Image 1 (cartoon, rainbow, N blue to C red):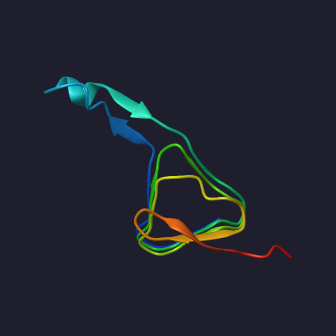
Image 2: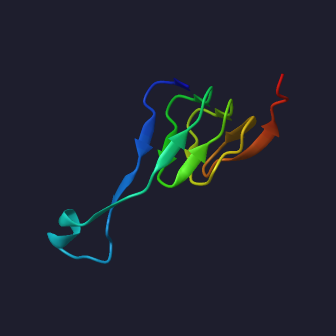
Length: 88
């Protein structure tokens, strides 16, 4: 896998049902899976509970909120499919 500059991989979050100091004590964590050959463009943000597929590309500055299938290019906020990459 390849990462550009300033990529954020954010698997944790605070429980927004809690208030005041309790909010800081209760965190949730959701897995992130980045598969073989994936390329994450500079400034992208990968949120929890997603999988970045094999040999897929995330465009620079994208915010990934959903799974990216294998061999797919996504970009934008939220990231959307641009096109498929033909596997060799």
